[in-house]
Image: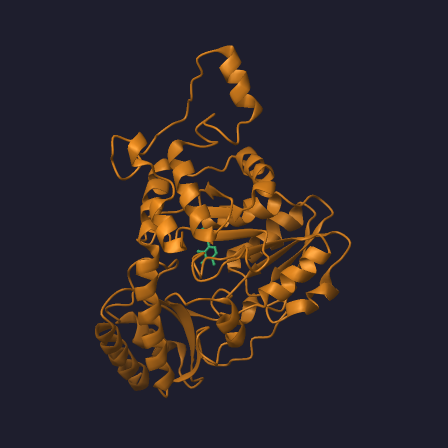
Length: 388
Ligand SMILES: *Cc1c(COP(=O)(O)O)cnc(C)c1O
């Protein structure tokens, strides 16, 4: 079965559920056992069955089956947020005295976790330039346990040569993880490109309606028990209503993503023609570092991208543009049905690469509104920008 078909059917079984299409939501803490023997048996293999609410419910397992179908993995683990998926996956593979390599363009809270929690626990992080490719080999030490990538990068969208990086990692027995949130596990198959673990903030496109906090860790059967046991031990777990909503989200993910992709491409194309815009950082556009790699490895683009404005525009002028937009409210997170914008400055967030653009930056999320309405709104915004 092709992915589009598979994700409609994974994680549900109408014939075991009165013929009802969707699985029910199980709210559970206590799971009772009919005998001491049954309890002991369940305890021998708790990661596979229904053992305790924090470990799993039929609802979280159904969602995880859908995620595995989406990502093309054997298994998936749901946790309470995207950041929890990142921290839980990394922590499962490191101990005091170890070293990890992390892309310089990672989601900033990921870097903050490395710079604070990991550092305090004696795990060293080296950041690498997102364009490093196979040269990452030079940064590997005897104690390097994990390479953490995110492609395209948060805010600045550098596309990384994942096959080159994972090849080196395999030669050295190092685990590779990717934050695959931008491609939603749909436009990029992490496992076909050599990654061991694909992580998503399901908060974004999988949920798709700006109402769920959830993270997913997709991985092979060989790593499943280790990571599942570890995040269970940390006390991580995903709430059943959120799992239900997110599984519902997956059913329509390809259809929604296609609209985000189309609106994103049109919006970015329109912005590229504006003289106020000096660069369009969208992987499908040549300005974007790694554009050729995106063409080679990805099957599409979501609705999230950035632009750099001319350096002559002051913060006050940018605020005049953004404050009065009707269809682009400002807010963190993204991946819901609605459009969004944020101003940002990557300068301070760089450790291993240089951000040389001088102009103000804007990150857009192209939602599912009518494209003409979005463009009209931005057109008025540019009038305010020029007048201020
Ligand atoms: C939002 C985001 C996260 C974190 O997800 P939360 O669910 O907000 O914790 C991680 N990675 C990327 C790329 C994100 O955009």
